[in-house]
Structures are given as structure tokens and as C-alpha cells.
Length: 275
Image (cartoon, rainbow, N blue to C red; front, side, top):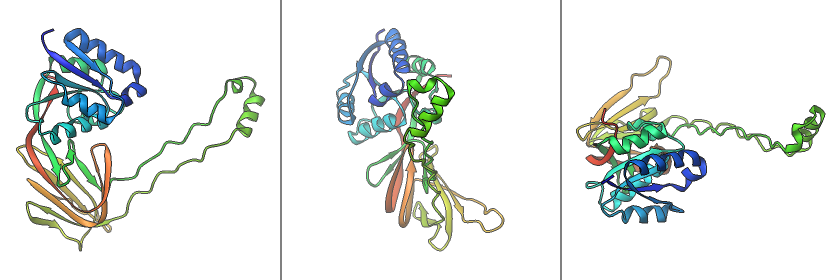
């Protein structure tokens, strides 16, 4: 019980899955001296993180909350001396891609029993951070159809349910946003051109690799047979094009006409299961 934890519970996690939040608090409080913080928004979230003192910060929330925590620490130039932990609640995909268990109990146990691992980070020319990777274009966003409202009275006789469905206003159905078409981009890795504006591309991906290098994959537009992806690695990646958007971790940014990412080697620490 000697270790001091600051457990910052993101407001979205409390709204999304209160039961998982309660379980995470119980497991962490049973294994360490945990101070629980319940910020109401991003500003209070950042303020709590900045006032952590000697306590090790633990974020309880989804991928947005994890990116927010790393961004706050990066811009305060405090990433080097901070080992961050996360218990994913809500969308767990980003945390799992980094090696964090998706289950609440397993993730909380990893906070208590795990070990810090230093990870590379992508930092762009606007001081934004990328933890797991980015993609251009961001891809289609699919909206699930909205469920029709069901009232308590509609659970009765079949003819009454039919009448309720007929009279109740139907929300408009939202179709999937179509995927963007081919892009004309110039991709440079360490100053060398990998693909130029004359070659349309279907997709570009950039991920932090190991040893301070970013892994870049460019998929040229294929006509007939599938084109072979072009791969490169380097410490800086620059993309230039006409008003392109990109997805980085959990969010979409843009449009921009130029963006450069550099690799910050072993820039941040994440506590992961020791095994």
C-alpha cells in the first residue's frame, strides 16, 4: 500500500459504463493508496494531471482520455519523468493496440503489478501527438441506425405496438459516409520523396516503430491488378497535398495542406503487464 496513485476518471467513462468505473476504483484502492479525481471536463482533467505531485497517474477512460493525458504531459514537457497507466473504459481499441488488457479487472491489476515500458511517439509540427498510428485518408465513418423509440405502453398488445410504430415520429436513417476517393500526395521520409503528386494513392499509413523510426506504407492507386505497397522508414515524415484529412489514434484532423511528423524515441512510459 506504499505506492501513491492519482486515479483520474474521465467524465465520459462515468457516463458510459459506471459499473466498470466502480470495479476499477475498487481494485486500485485495494492494492494501493489511491486518490480518486472526478474532473468535469478537459480543463479540470489537465489541472488534476498537473497537480499530481509524486502520485503515479492512472487514467480511467477511453482512447480520447489517454491521448488527452499524453498531450497534456507532452506540452508540459513532463512525459520523460512520468509513467502513465490506463484502465480502458468505453472504446478500448487504442489501449489494447498498445498492449493494455481490455478487461477492467485485468487492466487494473496491470496498473498495480505491471512494469513501465518506454514507447516511441509521433509529434507533428503543431505539437500534436500520435500514439499508435495515423491514416490518410481517414476512411468512412459509419453511423449506426437510430433505434425507434419504444414506450412502456407499446409492450402490450400487438395491434397497439403497430399503432405506436405508425404514429411515432421516425428519426431519419443515417447512411454510411462514403469513403474518400484517391488522393494526390507527396510523401517524404527523411527528406527523400517516396511518392510524388503525379501518382494517385489510395492510402498512406504512418506508425511509430522501434528504435526511433516511423514505419510508412503508401498504397498506390491500382488499375486492374493490385499495386504493390511502397514501404519506408525514417525519423521524419512529411505529407503535402491539397486539403487532406487524416485519422490519428481516435480523432480526425484537417483539412491541412502540409504536415510533418517526427519520431520522439522512447518519449513516454506506459505501464503494461509484466508478462
